[in-house]
Image 1: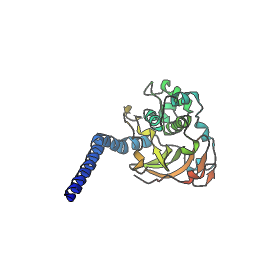
Image 2: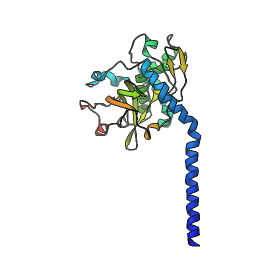
Image 3: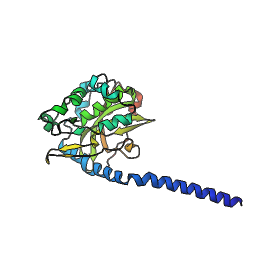
Image 4: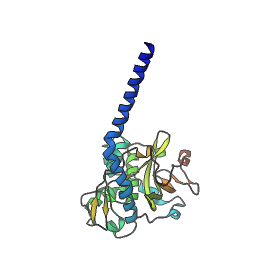
Length: 256
């Protein structure tokens, strides 16, 4: 009788685990196809159409790049005041549209303040998707960090990352965000959302990576040139910067 009870209990546990597995995988089958499209189509095209002109040598010393993280800006604060979690902030960011600097400004590289990015780009006469907040990777990265800082995320726990990435064989400079997730850094890729293809003259839609996607997947970074926010800066190749010791715990980066 005892073994029957044990066997019955074991069967119940197995059924529960199977059920959890099925319901964990099945609803996301379509989402997995979207993620595959982001990895194989959207991000490589972004990198190919508008690679970051800046190079490793631009970040050898403490620089003015920190001025682009502006948590006290009114436009940043206006957005931050409506949000209650980093997940919500990220969902706002992946709705921004990637547009190359060449299309938006007529130059290869131009950094905007978060204020201009959020309030003025929707009305730019050069904006190919009028009414949408648009710019390229660095604007999206430091504006997302600005919002997270304005929400109260400590400067020790969120940063802009600039470096070299490999998006499905397309290699180039890029900017992204990292936030402390427990005891590890979690990558957030705002530019996995919609983007404008200059050559085709077409807007491509994308829902972006889910928040937390890079908890279980390696971010496709090859090399980090610098980390920064409005308070801290760190260059891993030179060791220069005023960042705390936790910033020396570098991200796991490897080709995807």
